[in-house]
Image (tube, rainbow, N blue to C red; front, side, top):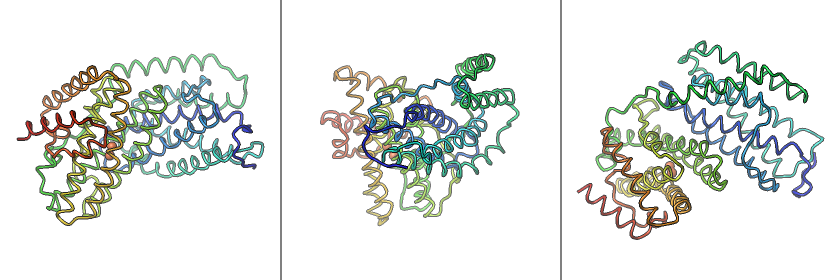
Length: 443
Ligand SMILES: [Fe+2]
Ligand SMILES: [Fe+2]
């Protein structure tokens, strides 16, 4: 195999198509993970899906960067093979989480791992260094993911009745076989299968419109006060564990929210997708940090009930900019205040390890909020209109929280981290308003 770094000499003609196809598959995988994982009743606490979400986002990021480096600016995937398209569309709208995740880790990912490996070892292809790295990294991630998926599938198998979807499963299997055949034979065509794929897609789409996927029974927290930063005696070991636990879940929800934004708005400007993808990596790491510290202190996953509050209110945003307002500006803005407040509190009580953890998370949060503010300004350049949309969105969330009986989360009473807010792109006037509002609410 020849390795070189001159993109002009690139001769890997079908890589472009392959990269586009893989991006599409990645989106399905992300959607499967982030839409189902909080809905899976008993397994939520036990499965490291955040890491899997991150693997997927990294692979698609590399795939896209490869295309851009090769000046083939086609970041948005299109699948031309009708059987693969039918299969994937069917999968996207499938409601049974077990079946969706089963196909993802038992069928699609091994298939693509195989394809990546074939490309890497093919002696007919000259690989430039960037493409070689992309394939090599992707292979490692995919191997890891497939290995890690085994316990996930075992737990899901216990919870979900596979036979419930037997008709759909038969159809998906037929489509998958047809896709593989079509790859072997360019002239392969079968109208009845093509019709089936169209029919399957239409039927599942209808089901999806009838009932949004997130309408699944979830366990709500018995005591939401645990999230109210100022009310907790963090020197008490049990409270500290509960607090880190709750924060770990907030970070995990952030991973899912960002993944769902990537999925839902994949056709937006490419720079937004790469920004969000980078953030996704951070959020997965934050969740891991909180859970690891919580375990060090004697806590364990599954110890407390979990909440989907953050997920629910972010999805009250009806478009991309409203989601940036809710998730980045409001929710993570307060998260930045809370992180730096935690640094002081833990440091004062001599827990330097937890203080450092929040210092690290807080530094990332500043960048997330700054990024959110950047895109809010980009979409709403007129300051009057911008304020209007921000306030309208914020009021919608506040009435949702009031209606649901919550008085926590971004309505938290932590002191505003003035200097960090400034670094996160808030203007002096805006910071003043936030301080006023918080003083009024919390006095
Ligand atoms: Fe975070
Ligand atoms: Fe964040």
